[in-house]
Length: 487
Ligand SMILES: NC(=O)c1ccc[n+]([C@@H]2O[C@H](COP(=O)([O-])OP(=O)(O)OC[C@H]3O[C@@H](n4cnc5c(N)ncnc54)[C@H](O)[C@@H]3O)[C@@H](O)[C@H]2O)c1
Ligand SMILES: O=C/C=C/C=C(\O)C(=O)O
Image 1 (cartoon, rainbow, N blue to C red):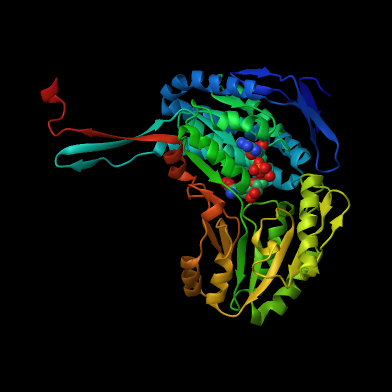
Image 2: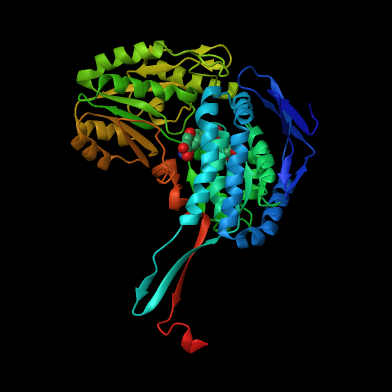
C-alpha cells in the first residue's frame, strides 16, 4: 500500500506530489481513510517544507512562459482540461465518494460536471475580458489584467475537486502558475487532476500539487516571498493564520470561510417549499459552508412548518453514499463526528429540545437533527457545526427576523422563503450575507460574485472578480499626441 500508487474503486491514483511536471515522494506518508467504512485508501506522500519550497520554485520557473502564452492558447489548454475531466467523470466521482463520503450520484450528475464547467467557464471568460478605454483630456486610459505570479490555493475536504478547480481554473486562465494544497482528509482527486492537466498539455510547473498536513507545509507556502496570491477555503481559525502568514510579504489573500447562515420562513411562504428547502440543508451531511443551519420561522406558521419538515426529514435515507437511494452519507472523520456530537450534547445540557435526531448512528454517521428551545447567544446558534444539525427559532415580525438572522459573527449566505416580493427586497437589503437566495437554495452562476462578509471571508471570487483577484491590474495612460510625434 505504500507504493507510488494506490487503487481506489478500481482507479489508479498516484499518491506522490506533482511538482514541476514530475511525481515526487516524501520521506514520510500519511494514511488516507474512507469516511464510508474507515478502510485505508492509500499512503499519501506527506509533504514537508522541502517539497513546499520545490513546488513554489517550480511554479516560479514556469511562470514567465505561461504568462506569455497567448490567451487563446491558455483557453485552449483549459478547455482540454475540461474535456479530460468529462472523459473521467465516472472515475473522479467514485474516487471522490470513497475519499470524502459525499453522495456518488451527486458527484456523477452535478459535482464533476461542475468541475469541467469551472475550466470551460474561466477559459471563455478570459477571452471576453475587456474594459472600455477611458479618455481624460485627450489621454487614453487602457486597463489590462496582467498575470500576477505563483498562486497558493488551499482547499477543504467537503467538496474537494469542485472547490479546488473553482480556484485553479481562474488562476491558470489569468496566466498564473499554481501550487494546490488539497485537504489531508481528501487528497485523491487533486492527484487525478494533475494527471488530467498534464494529459491536456498544461506545461510542466504550471500546476503543482503538494499533499500533506496544513500545519506542516501551510506556513511555508503562505509565508513565501515568491508567492503572489493566496486563495484559501476552510475554517475561520485556519483562515486567520493564513492571513497572518500572508501579511509577512503583504501577499493578497482571498478567504472563503465558515458560515452559520439563516433560513427565514415568513408566514406568507409556500409551506411545502419552505420545508423542502429546510430539509435540503442536510445535504452532504451538513458539511456545506453555505448551509442555512438556523431555521427562523414566523411564529404563526411554526407548527405547520415543523409538521411538514418532520415528515420530509423522516423520509431521508442515511447510509452508504455509493447507494443511489441514499440521501445522507457519513461524516468525514470520526473526529468530526465527535465534534458534532459534542455540540449537540452541550446544547441539550443547556436546555435545547430535540425535534428530530439528536444522536449518532454508529461510528461514522450522525442522524439528521433539529433542535429547538435554543438561546440566540448559545453555542449551538452561534458556532458553525459542519454536521447535519439545524436549529429552529421563531420570530414575530420582520424586524425580529432580521435581527436574529444578522446576529452571528458570520455573513456567508441567507435564504428567504416568502410569497411577497416587496418583503424579499426589504429583508434582503438588511441582511449581512455574500449570497441571498429567495425561494431557492444553492443555485450558482459562475458569473456572480461569491464570498462572505464578516468572519465568513475576505474578497469575492467568480466572474471578473476572480480575474481582479488573480491579476495585477494595470492602467496604461497614453498621451494626447499619440504615437506619430514620438517616432
Ligand atoms: N466559504 C466557502 O466557500 C467554504 C467552502 C467550503 C468549506 N468552507 C469551510 O471550511 C471548513 C471545513 O474545512 P476544513 O475543516 O478542511 O478547514 P481547515 O481550515 O481545517 O482546512 C482547510 C485547509 O487548510 C489547510 N491548513 C490547515 N492549517 C493550515 C495552515 N496553518 N496554513 C495553511 N493551510 C492550512 C488544511 O490542510 C486544508 O487543506 C468549514 O469552516 C467550512 O465552512 C468554506
Ligand atoms: O461548501 C461550500 C460550497 C461552496 C461552493 C462554491 O464555492 C461554489 O459553488 O463555487
